[in-house]
Length: 235
Image 1 (cartoon, rainbow, N blue to C red):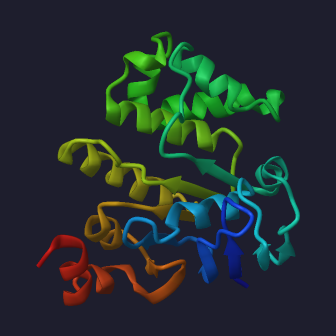
Image 2 (image 1 turned 90 degrees about the horizontal axis):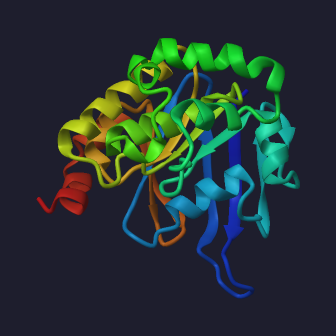
């Protein structure tokens, strides 16, 4: 049984807008799945539909065999889906520790334990636990945002362009952190602008074009596909 299936999803932001046009994806237990595609293809919209932030007008979303299509974003979080947005994903005026604490609002009893786990997993955050989040570097902010997403103990983590705006070195370090996290058994579904690098660490990948998947395959295979490299690297 697939961990997640999103089948024939139609969605958009306006009454007549159709950004997603019967898009379908799946995530198996333990996978990293990356969605790539040109700007405006609907990649982030599809992630937001899975997270419950954008309603699906048509189609079905099934998580661990249960239809969650009608659940709210809060309901999806309780069901095990955690979404880390591309922007505004930390509270800059709060400390690192306060960002983690507020992210466990649904389970205050387990929050302290998970915060300790995050500090063990990411020592950089432990060393800056009292610092305001806005003082962190770009890469450190993304690690904090990912740690905040983990505070709900999700069964599926959604990452929307996690390396956006990062230096090549910071992006590489973040990809290493994503790989290490996945090696603990946590499935990850992400949208990423660094297509080839993301596919190289992914179990599988999807190419989304004009609101519908146009290709699917093993991540490393797509990463070396000449057509994918031509489309996303210009040669």
